[in-house]
Length: 147
Image (cartoon, rainbow, N blue to C red; front, side, top):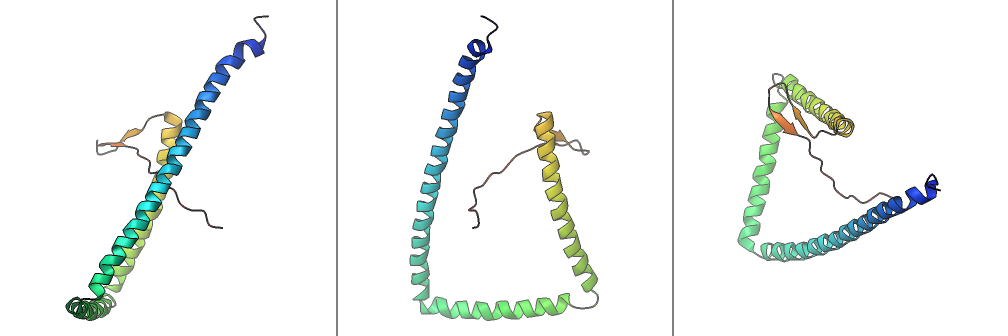
């Protein structure tokens, strides 16, 4: 009878399964609670910001300076565009855009490689060619699904 798998494996698995299930339920509950707290704090923050915006909107000297700042910002943007569109700078501007795009692409690939490295090796640190030891960290965030 000792060879009967039902007798030897059911008890440990069910204890482990129930512990894991309870832990998942507890985590889910904490996540939902934190979502509620964050949503409530965001609503309160929005209300407080609205009160500040109303106070600023009703101050005539602030509104006057705001209009001056907008005018200066518009002039600055126009001057910047004019300078950056000069024949000497166009190749540099394009190279800058290309480099930014390349950095984004390599960063995404690096993230994938780090995840796979950490998953397969079980190690969360890596030493670079420069001798610096870096830790692999993950940032999880919750976003609403689109319909």
